[in-house]
Length: 113
Image (cartoon, rainbow, N blue to C red):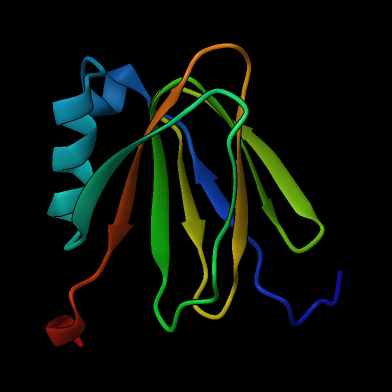
């Protein structure tokens, strides 16, 4: 991967820091950072290729198992994981396993600049 290419950052849910994990707690954590959250459920086996965006966005897993690929960088995300996708990057999401993946997609509002 080109060193100038931004990479995703992964943050794992830490109950000592973040408290008990729940869908609402994860949504509140993202909203407290100034993001607007859209909740989505992806069927098992779904593959979604995202388009590049002009803003950083966050992908958070509420339940299920998701493989996120950004250029040559891949990560497996599970309950409570948050991946930061840099501006200009496009991600590929794969819902792994036999269960649907419940996720939160978070973006900053356009007027927050």
